[in-house]
Amino acid sequence: MLCILFISASIFTIHNASASGSFEDISSKHEAYEEINYLVNLGVIKGYTEKGKTYFKPNNNVTRGQVAKMVVVASGNKPLVVNKSSFTDVQVGSELSGYVERAVQLGYFKTNTKGQFLPNKPLTRDEMSYVLTKAFKLDTSEYENIDSPFVDVDSTHDYVQYVNAIYYNGITKGSGQNYNPDRQVTRAQFALFVARAKSEKYRLELPVKGVAVPDTSQVIGLVSSTTDGLNIRKSKDSSSNANIVGTVNKGGKLSVYAVEGDWLKVSSEDTYAYIYKKYAQFLDADGNALGDVQKQVTTTQSINIYVKPTSSSKVISTVDSKVKLPVYKTVSGYYLTEVNGLPGYIVANSTEDVKVEQPSTPDPKPTPTPDPITPSVTGDLLGRATVDNLNIRTEANSTSTVVSKLKKGDYVQVNSINGYWAQVTSNGQTGYVHKSYLKLLNQNGDALKDRIIIIDPGHGGKDPGTVVGSNSEKAITLKVSTLVKQKLEAAGAKVLMTRTGDTYPSLQDRVDFTNANYGEIFVSVHVNSAANTSAQGTETYYAISTGDMHQEDVDLATFVNNQIVNNLKMKNRGVREQQYYVIRNMNIPSILVELGFLSNSEDRAKMTDDQYIELFAESIYKGILEYYSKQ
Image (cartoon, rainbow, N blue to C red; front, side, top):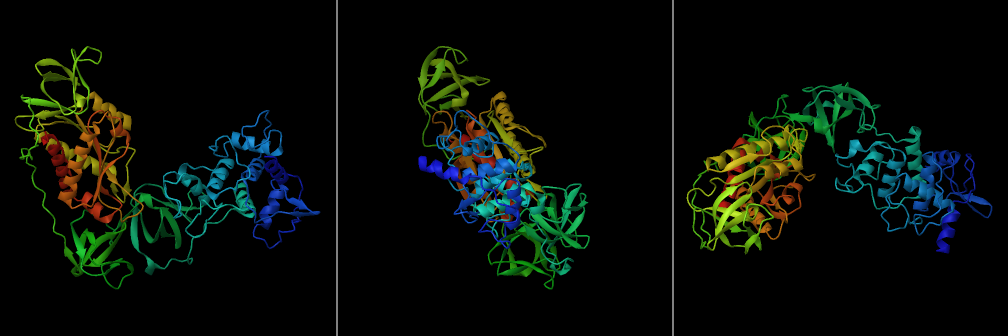
């Protein structure tokens, strides 16, 4: 411990270096020369004196203790004097202690190190992003829901919003496409970053690459703004208004030269500029909306994607043989299609049509596959216990006397239902059971008759869910859910939806709605998305809930998932356990189905085609019917 404290103290020994650059190891040609001297004048940096000479040691890793002092001083704060150290590895009364205590008090560091500050531990680049963002009060709100510009910092990374903040504020540009979040930071590098954070003078530019006048032969597409007042910027930086060179209103059109992450490189006023991709939708070569998918085709050979319906136009990309593509329009022997979110034209006779199973009218009375177990109890409506030790009570409340118990799998005759309580008869004895723990099974007529089913169209209102172009998750889920409701009602079920229009019920609102309406099963409908546009397919989730009732969730999820996969020829991503809020907070069989990936062109073509929408709805309907048909 004494050794550690000695090292820490030596870091803070006061040996001023003059602004003329008196560090023996920092020449005037050093990349950080100006920034280091700027910080020396502010009192942020002190050097090491050895044998009468002062060194900066630029290639040494900067430690957490050194960083604490630098950012406290650079942000205009003073050390904090304390009587008792907050950390076992920082000695109270030392110079290090005052800066560490102040930095932590101001929230500059995450302190999850079990009572230690680790002052001699080198700072990593992900920690650096957090420290600089907090110390210099950079606004992260703009960057919480956008992808990082770096391939090694994805949207789930703990520090993504802080990395974005220092990138878009001109503090770091990373190394090519990488940020290297786990790499340690040298003293020279940190001096550069602090100087940039402290002074606009040292900030990096985010220049527009390329020549001054756009080459129109390099246009890859045309977009229109989906909102009024969309900012046109000279760089990919939304952190300030200084780079705004114009605006475009809803419906305004711009030529696109490249897709760069969340940004579209466009032309405006005879120069390159950028708009945020989220607020634009691609158009066809004539400037019209793509419209609905007409059909799907499969490529019969490797083919080019052209920006216009002619082979003399620019090639946007190529597609391999045997790739399924959506077709929006046919123009002079070319198909308008879409690849990775970008529309283009392919030669029609280099493809063949995909045969699509025509949607059938759902039969409200299909013949279910009989369950091998035959209930020993008779009656028009039976209940099967879905948990062990299920109480039968003398009255319809949870405080009355328990007269007997049911084991999982036991059947009872259901005489009547009032709210969440079912009057049942078991072994000649009548009592009351909470119906959440009974699977209600009609023995005569329709399997779905009088069943109370809650359908939850995901998102809505201010929350659009995932969005690609003009297609939003909230619109797709509402369309599918509405059709499911109609099909279930035609089969005799009582169906309620958590929303019937473009409104936004919170997650708890959806749970409360289900409880208030005495729901018996809950199906939440969603649409998936991924940064990797090759991700595709259907997956359905359940949550582990009270007792062992989750087997009912698994049954319901499996029936629905398999129906969708088989009927729509979707990739089967399977049935998975996940503690999503709306399904984990239910006491009834509850599932969340992800129909497909809006980010994948093949899945998106299906989810935006009315013919397939009908099939999605029918498949969910048939999955629910299959669940209730299983005794």
